[in-house]
Amino acid sequence: MSDSSASGRVPAGARLLVCGGAGFIGSCYVRDVLARRDGTRITVLDKLTYAGNRANLAPVEADPEQAARLAFVHGDIADPDVVDMLVAEADAVVDFAAESHVDRSILDASAFLVTGVIGVRVLLEAVRRQTEIARAGERRAPDGTPMGAPRFLQVSTDEVYGSVEEGTSREGDVLAPRSPYAAAKAAGDLLVGAYRATHDLDVLVTRGANTYGPYQHPEKLIALVTTNAIDDAEIPLYGDGLQRRDWLHVADHAAAIDFVLRHGEPGGVYNVPGGNERANRDVVAAVLARLGKPWALVRGVPDRPGHDRRYAMDGGRLADLGWRPTVDPSAGLDATVDWYRANQGWWRAVRDASWADYYARQYADRLAASRPAEGPG
Image 1 (cartoon, rainbow, N blue to C red):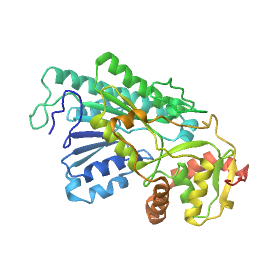
Image 2: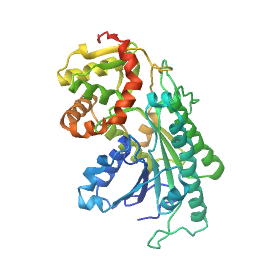
Image 3: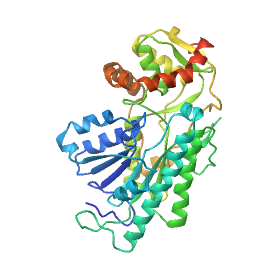
Image 4: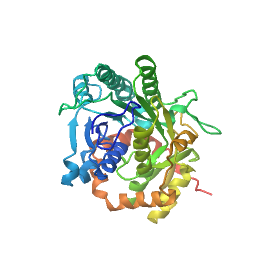
């Protein structure tokens, strides 16, 4: 089925263009949607930077039925020629593409701006052109059936709100990003809103909490702690480790994005909280306990510049739409740690020469100046 309804909702069996679909959250979305076997067809567009990994799609490509509904295009969302061709055949576009690690954005922000701002603008322009064609009644699927205007969903982050000292962020709050990564994501959100206001496009934004789970690049906190601890390597912990985050399992995050894609109101912005606020220090302790590793591995290192103290979002709008997270926080963390322990081949391949260079740039001096970290309690 290719003709979406006038309200913009996306039916089962649609043609989806998933940008950044070989990354952490994007690949989970692809795996979960195709596993439903409801006829949905997905084209993944991914540049395969360090965080994009074809191995993340291996479970799909190993299943003949799912693989037949998956196409992979190695390309850049900032390339209009590639994007125009793919958007022309899509009922909906879901944009996960992003350089996503704050630490790397501090070292060099250029790639974040290209993907998060220029790339989003290229996608929106392609959606605008296809919307105009649909409004003229001339948009057709490859088999000649009529197609409605494409729906566009931008996957964003709680970090666009900045540090939240108390209370929770709501979708209408002023954006106050404090890192180059968050600023790039906020700019993308604003572009989406501007194209809605100017061109009346069917667009959506989701803002997810700190996400964890299988297939996450080992630069991120839970994955870094787990993989270092497996090797009995020092674990860097920024500052006092009392920065607070709301943790959301990747399966819940992917499910929320798909729910909003299919049920969200055109132009809507939806927070996706996890309902699991914890201090970084306590998360590290829980990972070590699961692995049976000592706290002595943890080293307190100088904090990163502009480190936000706390993120917290109100999820009422998404709950009113009919969605809430389902993964138990403790079980989700334990299962994640167990996955890294059982899939060492995956993450050891990721920690290649480029990883070693990044890790040295980010942590060598900090670890040299480190001290034993104060434990939880």
